[in-house]
Length: 462
Image 1 (spheres, rainbow, N blue to C red):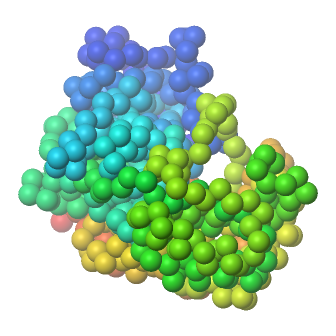
Image 2: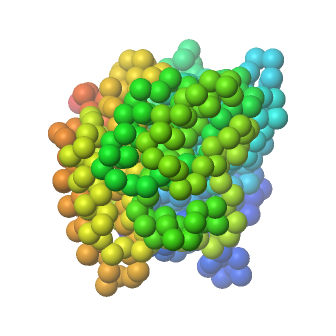
């Protein structure tokens, strides 16, 4: 992690903000600085739990004047470690949680520190929904700015496809309302361009009607046939059905018979965003692949798609992960998945398959900074490791697995890119997208103050 030796004026910070300033001598510092990834251990000079947009502007001004490295934290899930800094200052948005739903217009304003489950639950009170990702404790800020691929992606598109407006504080401290009419270049850029352009303090989303639906976990035995079949069933399903197929060792879950614990299975998270009868029919092809080892798919409310996260504050996994896109999963590809998972001794390892298409694919590739509209399947490969002595072996396994799955699509979803260098950042923004983002960056952050992200350097002058 990059370090900074700049001395922060802590007295100025405390005078300028209404929120809480936490420094290393504070008894709450260690708890406040912890983020989710277990291998990220930043020691900021100050963490500012901001109270409002004015606080955000004040911290930005201090970081700009002192040349301190600036990080922005929402949920703290950044696999690349961007939620913290070594020796710099953190804008911590966790106290900005106000959520306002307008059921008549089917819109929702949420502050940037809210989590996916908090916003999802607020919308569900009115039989409305907005799709985020697959984990309730993830902050909506980082997730939205990178795209947002979740359980409604085939029916209602990415999170950014339902973003109507945002309030953002730029590197100059200016507070802007951006939408399709006001600052449209910046509005285009924040829909997929990550945290490169400012700190978003509020988001306005379009909501979709969604009351009772069908969804939950279905656990199937993992063979080449069932993996290829589950992908084919996902591709053939109505757009109302989106899912995440996790091929992984079965955790010791109480609803799965004990003899299957530790065996590689398909942990399918399936969601049908439509009427219950049609949803049950859409699940039939998955149930026909093999007798499920567990079948928790049933009529539910949308927030139930996010499993409980008891003890999440103490969960800090050590993991190596890579993301990619592929075009197909036939029997040979499925066999490759099974073989690689069987060959690893990682306590937890997984190949996660997300079939895309539908509403997401109908948005033109240049309409937002997320440019992977035609990609068919997203794959995430991960392995947990047990300490520094174990990391190299697990990283080699992950890289070998990714190479074996490669089908020539060099793209990457920015929210799942870890610390992989500038080439992978460019892979996230193909086809002229990177150059267009660099031009917007040069307008709104020419000094590259916001660089604790998958960074896009400002376009060179002239």
